[in-house]
Image 1 (cartoon, rainbow, N blue to C red):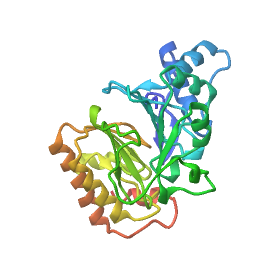
Image 2: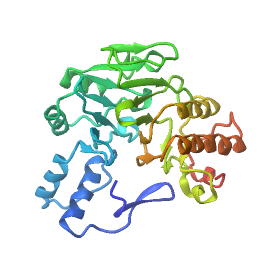
Image 3: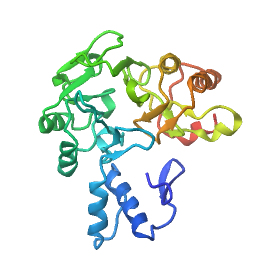
Length: 299
């Protein structure tokens, strides 16, 4: 968030410049509120700007009609993004943002949530608090659940390889089985808006050690991270290829900025480039640690 003020340096965040105008300070406060590690600090006398920033979440994702970024990224979810889909059949939260009473109230004003869809075990956060506060039912693949995170309490536990619709039978959303990043990772395809909520499966521009600096070499702008893969890289790549047959144009990932493809041809091309790039690096090679810089040279 707020790329005019914060940037990446050696795989960590750094301050590019200080915000100057009121509008810039509000944008910086949005980043402050969303920082999962509370690493951004602001002036204590800017209460009004902070309040405006708080009221801005969930914020409409540009280019969509009813998909919202919740902000308030949670350290429990490794800083992953949470989203809200507003729909007449009942709102859906995708992955859990940090539990915050002000955000709860804002979501309630937008209609609450009927379901909370959890892509995989990494990004569940305090899902049980959200479910209780909103009276929402949770959806997750059974193979991703466990007692430690209380995901064994999830009301709707998917089994098999799908695809699945929502429990109420509505057909505008489809859950797709995308193993690889984790054993039973799933993504959510919102047909009405041609939006793919990809969790940790697929990203645009940057995620982990992967960056799109290779885009200038014709290697594409969609990618995966090997450093955070905890199951199978080759399965993750094959799951990416499977997504070419789904008619999505906007990508809303768990990490990194939203992405967009122009049409089906570009979608297929970008996903194929992932397979070509990762094939060159060799499948089945998991990193031994999270020293991200040692993998950047591979790109």
